[in-house]
Structure formats: C-alpha cells, structure tokens
Image (cartoon, rainbow, N blue to C red; front, side, top):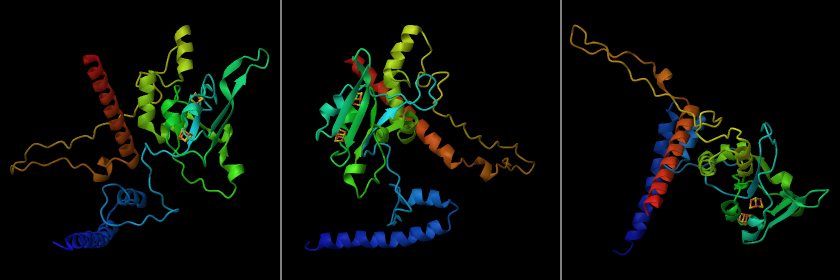
Length: 284
Ligand code: SF4
Ligand code: SF4
C-alpha cells in the first residue's frame, strides 16, 4: 500500500519517543548509581533515546575499538628490562601501512655499528593514519597496538600530530587494561606474557617463564567466588519452610566483581574457541 513505509517509520519514531520518557521514569526510581545508570542507558540493550552529555559523559568504546596505534613497552616495574621497547624495528609495519605514514630509524651499536633490534626513532603521522590496524595485525612481536584515545584534535598539526617514539610508547599494562581479552589471547598464542625474545632467552638459561594462567601468573584471571545459595531451614511445625535470610546488600556483587566476572567469562570463551579451532585444524 502506498505510504505504508512512511507510517511504519513514523511508528518507530513514536515508539522511541514514548520509550524515552518511560525509561526516564523507570531509571529515576532505580537504585543504580549514576555510573551504572549511564552504562545501562547508553549500552547496546538500551531502549528509547538517551542523550550522552559529551564531553562530560563519554560512551564506553568496545575492546576492539581502534584509533591511532601505540608502541608497547615494558612496564616500569618490569624485573629484567623496565621501559624496554617490544618493537625490534623490523620494519614490517611500515611496509604494510597502506598510506605509508610510519617512519622508523633502527638503532645501531655505537662501537661495531651493527644494527640493534630496537628503534632509535619511530614516527607516525596520525593525520595520515587511517586507523586500519594493519600495522598491529602484521607485527610479529605484538609490539604495536591500536589505542582507544580518539580525542586528538589540535590547532597545530606539525607540532602535535606527528607522534614520536616518546608519545607513542605506552606500557604493556595499559594494553592489558584496555584490551584484556585480546592481550590474554595473544599471551596464550605466545605461550607467555613476556616478549618473544625474553622467552627465548629464558628458555636457554632455564629461567621460569610467566605462562598465562600458570600457577604464579601475576595476571591470572580473577576467579569470583560463587555466591552462596541460601540454605533452606527444616520445615517448621506448621509445615512451612523457613529460608535463612541473606541480606540483599551482602549477596549483591559489586560493580568491580561483575566486570571481573565478565572478563573471566570472555577469557574462558576465547580459550574454548582456540581449543576448538586447534582440534578442528588437527582433525583436517
Ligand atoms: S612490525 Fe612490530 S616490531 Fe616490526 S617495526 Fe613495526 S612495531 Fe616494530
Ligand atoms: S593503522 Fe593502518 S594507516 Fe595507521 S599506521 Fe597502522 S597500518 Fe598505517
């Protein structure tokens, strides 16, 4: 029927219009904290229209979100090589970068003049970078990653938008924080939380290697203890079961616990997926 599409579209608009007010009223009486409310109302399951008050409020970006790259360096408290580059200046990222916006200067030994596997200088022109993620995808050392920071506007392009090594470098713990699942998957692939070169060196000397999920893994996914089920008391003389009272506040997991549990589930799902893929490839 002519005009049916217009009516359907108007119906969607009217539904959103009313849902917005219904949600406003529902969340006005909710016991959630302002942060929890914001996360729910701007999430993917939200209904109605919710205006995010940017820049005071910001939509949480998904873990796989990618903007300009950054270089991974060891944490400052790393026992063997604090602040050391993961990048070996192999140059692969610069080769695969479609708009050619990466420049690398390889270090060399001041005495022998032989090349040293670390960059002396590393530049990325972030105005040319098209955020494709090829550099991170192809890096054989997991040394370049896509950042979540998208607020990079500035008046001075030359001075601020050509990122040097200092500006690009961020510790490994930062990568683990913004992309816990991916960092975990990569560590499982490398069979260690350490850089490949460190693993090789430790294998030669027999030194212990930090294995993801191993006994002494400092980054072991936190296991949230199961909530205790309320214990049913014996039926009373009147034949009524009296349930042991569990205070609601004590049983409710905190926001942090929920986030940890979510991360643990993601990691377990990633490991199960990898095991299934491995079993499938071995079966072929
Ligand atoms: S591919 Fe990785 S290791 Fe090679 S130069 Fe680029 S960031 Fe460094
Ligand atoms: S994200 Fe793409 S365009 Fe940007 S530096 Fe990496 S390869 Fe180049």
